Length: 226
Image (cartoon, rainbow, N blue to C red; front, top):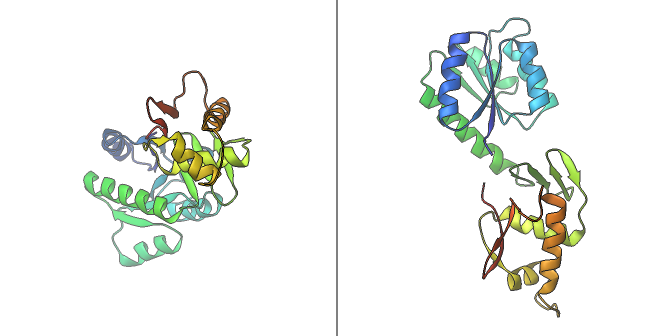
């Protein structure tokens, strides 16, 4: 699943140029040309990163930054402006921006900063695991798909936590039994298959043709790598 980037910039040429470069890197790009529209789209779409120009029609980038920090605090924000004074940079960071880039800018530098910010966001929020349309909250012990909560048993939650925490890794039935039921569990590995089947019925659009929780023939199961 592509990371969603919101570009809030009133100059159409800059938006177009930046969008082309971001899309080449595989990002999904949303656009807004005013501060008010930027807030509306950000709160509706919850992008991973907002690239935010300071000088905007209506409310300026500083105010947009302040609003977004309260409404979607986990979103990364990079301030983008023609101003180069150190005070402007500091003011933007004080308002809650994660980074700052002055115009004119090299699109490669912007992309590097976006990728670096995304890595930091993921590293700093280890209690939340996101894989495709799923969001697993390890503290609240909840799983959502496309922002809709899925009702799981504790065992199902334990299984999905193991898989989502190790995407692409194949687990044998014996490993799944040990890690979820304990090494001293006495019983058949069939219980693993029953729980996998039940879990698929809850998380897959078509449980008969699973897209996320894959069977690895001759081994066991794995969570499809993003």
